[in-house]
Length: 148
Image 1 (cartoon, helix red, strand yellow):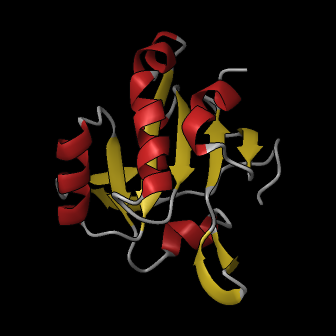
Image 2 (image 1 turned 180 degrees about the horizontal axis):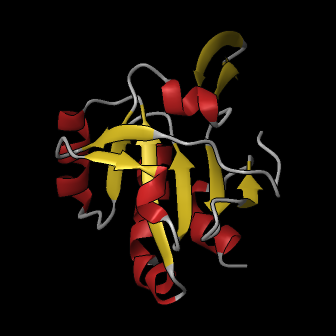
């Protein structure tokens, strides 16, 4: 994981609508940047819906929320529509953002090791500094982890 207190790596990717989204778009704002494995899977849906349900609290505290996965823009569109997600999702099929944020690596699933997305969340302050990093995400209570 990237360390708290370090500068967040620059990123640039496409959201569900094909718009370019960059870290610099969030200058002078706080950002919850979360990485998740797959749209519409149980854990990822629970995490996204928890963030959705608490989205107004994040906004009231000056935070934007942005999700990143390898899924396509079309998959993100369906996921957002189905669960009425109020925030954007970045498509990162080449894993460039995932790797920059150390959210791509070796995973163990049912005793088998594979490369994949490591469920990770970073909170980035107005100056682009990482102020919190969560590796053990509680998908159903992720907002509580962040708003502690």
